[in-house]
Length: 93
Image 1 (cartoon, rainbow, N blue to C red):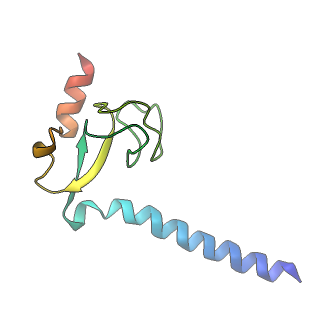
Image 2 (cartoon, rainbow, N blue to C red):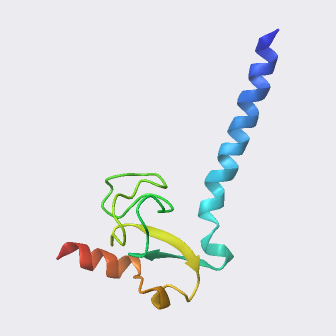
């Protein structure tokens, strides 16, 4: 009797996971941009530039140029943030 319940729960979990995954992809479409170097430890939005982690909330230090957070378009520079290209250049030094 638990098998139908498990199938429904698995299907629901899959739908929710797909919705959350696509929400991040659409953030740029909703007037947001990635801003690097402004993140407090543990408050990054997703994977970093160096590839040392691939999930949100895993940054280890404050204001690391590898880490990013979505901000409203046009506000990154005011927060002393960087674009991806600027962050890559800074981390190569």
